[in-house]
Structures are given as C-alpha cells and as structure tokens.
Amino acid sequence: MKQVTAIIKPFKLEEVREALADVGVSGLTVTEVKGFGRQKGHTELYRGAEYVVDFLPKMKVEVVVKDADVDRCIEAIVRAAKTGKIGDGKIFVTHVEQVVRIRTGETDEAAV
Image (cartoon, rainbow, N blue to C red; front, side, top):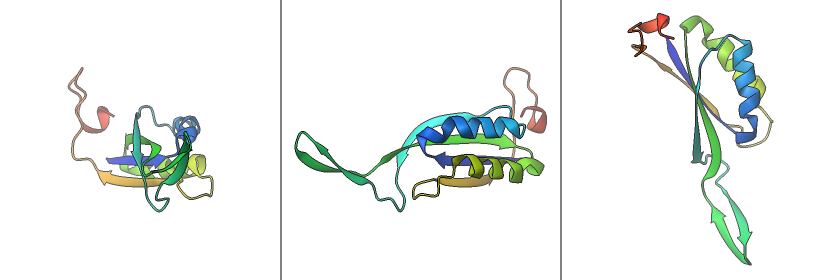
C-alpha cells in the first residue's frame, strides 16, 4: 500500500476530492497547512504598512491506496489541482507498512 500526500491550493480542494472519488478513493484526510516553495511568499499592505507573508495557505490531502491504484490517484489529483501557475503544489508517495482499522481490527488492504 502507498500513502499519497498532495499539497494543493485551497480553492482546488473540492475538485480534487471529486476527482479522487471518481477513481474509487473512498476516504481521505484533509489538513489546512501553510508553507512555501519557489513562491517565496508575497508582500501585502495592511493599514498603510507593507509586510511579507512568508507562509501561504495550502491544503494537505492524504489518501492510502493499494499499489495498483497509485498512478490513477496521482493522475486524478494532477488533473484536478493543476492551474499551470506557480504554487500548484506537490505530490509525495510513501510506502505504508501496516494499517489497522480500530473499530473492527481489520488490517492492511481490508482496513483501507
């Protein structure tokens, strides 16, 4: 199994959720996060004073899928989250050794 973690722009969350549902992903975890990459933040004016906003709001979407479903999952996220502009985000794929469903005690793929 693999964990697919996507860092995306906040306004793309609903599109990504729908795209993942369309490829059969039944559950996901979403976290509001802040960060920056090549964007390096931006400057804003507030009450006449200029200041730098280093960390930009992002959404972190995490799903655990079977190895066979990873490519479809990645393609769905890219298709839904891409704007073609800087700051579209990143996708990270990591190996998951074990999963346990707390309620039933099911393990691994049966727990996903």
